[in-house]
Length: 117
Ligand SMILES: *[C@@H]1O[C@H](CO)[C@@H](O)[C@H](O)[C@H]1NC(C)=O
Ligand SMILES: *[C@@H]1O[C@H](CO)[C@@H](O)[C@H](O)[C@H]1NC(C)=O
Image (cartoon, rainbow, N blue to C red; front, side, top):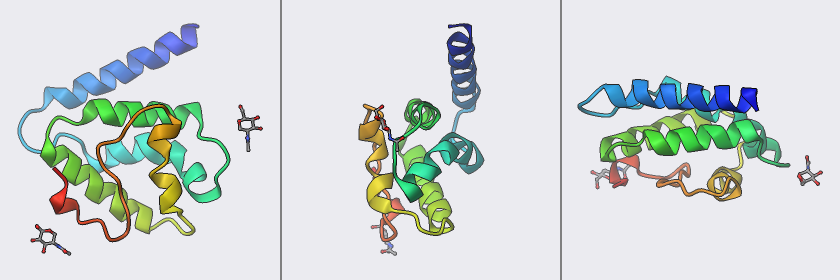
């Protein structure tokens, strides 16, 4: 219970830090990578998504402020995913629904991220 609360506080703090900066895209690719790293094993190997992976997805979903964020996150995921050998894009795009949420972007190797709204 205490651990859960701590994780929640950490998540909220991370979101506050992000929403603190105004202007263009507010989500850095490094931050996005940290959130999504626990999802990589599912994307490559399958099995089950972990709680940590879903936490990352929730944080990411809360982090989007505008289209610039969605476009830069799309490009970030696309670039990083391309570096992961054996990544399965079908699984990548299933993670949000497996976590009971919905991501505003789908990423495939041929996704044109500048068209993301
Ligand atoms: C996935 O989760 C289900 C239900 O919690 C469990 O029965 C199953 O063994 C898990 N599979 C793997 C590969 O961990
Ligand atoms: C992506 O979409 C933008 C805007 O519609 C377009 O200008 C650009 O050429 C497209 N890029 C690719 C690689 O298709």
